[in-house]
Amino acid sequence: MKKNIPTLFIFAGILLCLIGFVVILFASIAPITGAGGNISTGGIIFIGPFPIVFGSGEYGLQLIWLSIIILILMLIISYAFFKGYSEREKATF
Image 1 (cartoon, helix red, strand yellow):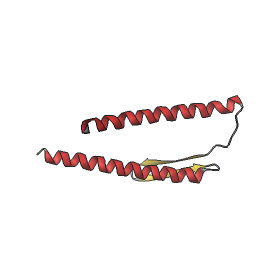
Image 2: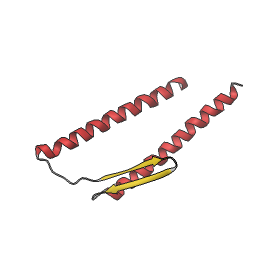
Image 3: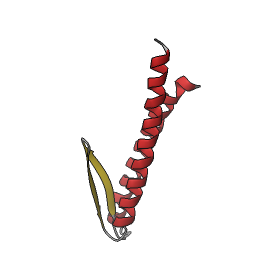
Image 4: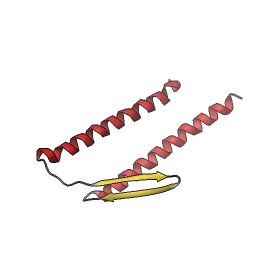
């Protein structure tokens, strides 16, 4: 089962990208069909060790905080994954 975990992460990432694509597609079609609403954006971009945090709109601040929480969870998962990988690599020598 442990060998399948990286494959599971790859498929989960691809699935999340596809879901995001579909959500953005439907959101871009909504103004054409006459359905209105407010648009809010927020996110984090990392360039090296420097984070760029952005957000706008009515819910921009909440989206910024949500992005930061997701970022922290991703860092924790990545740290745990690579720590386990390095320990397995040391055990083989």
